[in-house]
Structures are given as C-alpha cells and as structure tokens.
Length: 332
Image (cartoon, rainbow, N blue to C red; front, top):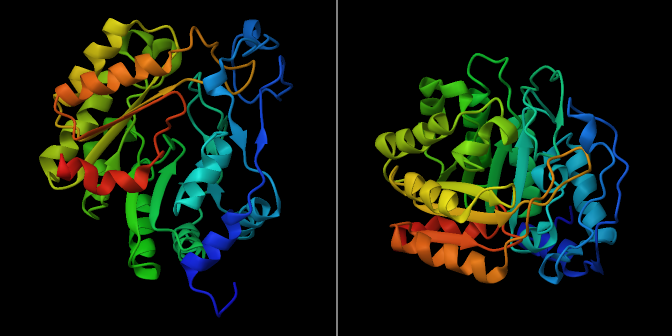
C-alpha cells in the first residue's frame, strides 16, 4: 500500500480503471461436482434464453486482479467471488465488500448456492484480524461479513463473527458493519453472541418461499429463519434487521407476497429481492425470469407492508447497495 495515499484514495484507484466486458453465460458450463446432486442436472443447457436485462458486465483488468491478490495474500474469501456475483465491481467501487469467514467449505448443500460443500477445515483464529486489516487497507466504508454454514461447531461460528466485528472496528473505526449470518441451527444463544456486538445491520436471508425449502434449502427451516429475524428485533430493536429472497425457482406471486408479509410481521426493516441465476448445470434450474416491471411491483407492495426499504430488481443480491441500508430503514 502506498503510504502517501489514504485508504479511500487507494480503493478508488484500484477500481477506477476496471475494464468491463459484455458477458453472457454459454449454453453449457463444465463444473466439477462439488456436492451430491441428482445426475439429471449434470449437463443441462442453461440460460439459453437469458433476457437482455440479465446480460451483465463482468469486471476484468489488472485492478480487479490486484484486489483479488490482496484477498489471497491474506487467505481471505469474498462472497462476491465465491457466489459469482454480477455486481462485484460496482460494490467495490462504492466502498462495500463482503467477506466470507469460517473457510470456503459449507456443511450444507443448498440447491442454488455456488459455494462448495464438504468437510470444513479447522477454524483459523487469526482470520478476524486479517479481515480487519483488509478492510483498513482497502478503505472499505461498509463491510459485510458472512460465512459458510458450520453446523459441526457448537456455536455455528458465532464467536468468530463477534471477533471479526471487533477487529473491523478496532482497525477501521469509521467502517459500518453488516453481518449476513446463518441460522445457527436455531441456537438462539449463538445469535445473541453476535447481537451483543451491535453491528449496524443484522442480515439473515430467508431465500425462498416455505413450499420450496425441501428442494432449495433442505437443511434449513422457514420458521427457524423467521425466528432469527424476530429475535433480532426483540433483543436489539435499534439494529437494522434485513433479509433477502430469490425468485425464479418455481414460486408463485401469491407465495412471494405471503412470504413478504410473514417477513414484515417479524419487524424486518430491509428486504432484498432478486432473480435466481443458476451457477452451473448441477444447480437447480431457473423456472422463469421475472421482469423488471414485476420486481418494481414487488417493491411497491413491500413498502405498503411496513418495510423501511425494499431493494428489488433482477440483479439485486443481498449485499447490493448495502452501504445505503444503514440509514434507509431508520429514515423510513
């Protein structure tokens, strides 16, 4: 890092010269099997009829690679890369980055997720300090911390979340912190460990409608996720409580609206809604593409339900415009 530059200037330099290219997912993608999925999905053509509004621009060029090298040099993972997020360059340019802690191997096998499944490595107790250092070096304004599921751990990784929040605040005091947490297998005491650190935003994604949980999130429970949201507002009402759902997995509009109401009833402040995009032929197929007009309608419906803010659009992901959510929900 150039000692003569402030962190924000360095971050701006790294992202200012991104060279984007028009990108369309090809008809078929080769991908090593990373989890136990039905053979029916192994080599299914995907996204041949992808609509124009989902043709995204990917970040390319030496500046993006430099940011990636910084992450690799610290043995860190960003969910931006692991989840193949189409908004990576935009978010990094806005001073937002999402760090994935607790390793890169998940104990669950959700049908939509690009993160690999398997036996996780041992916990790296120095990881929180490295995240804090990376946040400071990158000049991150809003840091999002998420993780794989670590169901083999008694606390599901809650203490590592708490320590990471503390390290970010120690090394980069001006950075706001959002945590995107798992359900901790319903162990509410683990949730309380994270809540005690008072991150600016507590995020837990519901992901889909209840009917599809057995296919989309087989190791999760809809009611358990609602309980995470409810407990957050009960124990820390001043925090921004946030969740997200995907569409395009076979849900109906009525199911989405009913799910949104159930989420709103927990006191949730911010809702994100985006189009499911299949990471590979091994993952669940896209049942249909929702149009921009339909996303706008869902946003308007959500605002009538009492959410402080609804971010709804085809390419919206949980951390998209996350830096704006700190104040939006409180402002109403």
